[in-house]
Length: 281
Image 1 (cartoon, rainbow, N blue to C red):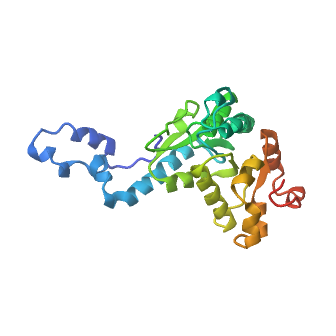
Image 2: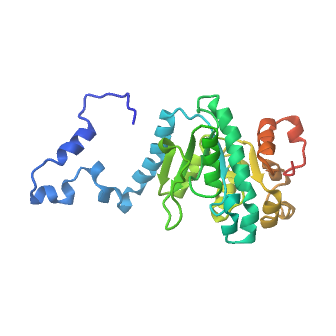
């Protein structure tokens, strides 16, 4: 890790190495003798949760700053959506049909990364959850464009591991969902949501809530696949019931293809976009 800050104090790395060279005695074998910052058991104690939260916030933030990443294009979507070539292995017919969005996600990421490359990979860098399905497609599209992309993985009891297309230097692993979601949105210039399950819905609604309540600036917010989203969420019913305002339906737009998504991002906030029917662009 880059560190331009110099102090007259002894380096922590040096002391960690030196501590391994002490004589083997009952005292030096005792857990109490371990350096606190090099003691995994101590760092995992219940009382140290605030420290772990801070570390998970700081580590990706510092490394992304060192890589000079200024803004990102967020891609949320299901881990179970296969690429079209493997749709025969899908668990359901619906998942097989949704495989078309794998290609759209890949193409969208490719086109956005070509733009990012013009900034030296500093602006509009693709960020996904780093796993399979739509996430893999996003990172894969960045590779197609010979650019970099970010993967924000999380430790799960099953399935989640970095896909082969995440830029290794920008591949992170998390314990806390909340900190991971913060990192998704901290640099977001646009948010694109593809069909998915509970995790995708969680990410979708948290981001929409932050924008709706003014806790986050409004950014282009695109839902790929109108038929899917209108089938699983009755947006108009929420508005008709008064649990959200009619204006809240204007926080997002439906798109079907990579080209439509890029056009929506490019025209977001223009009079033509503002005057369109809420949520129905």
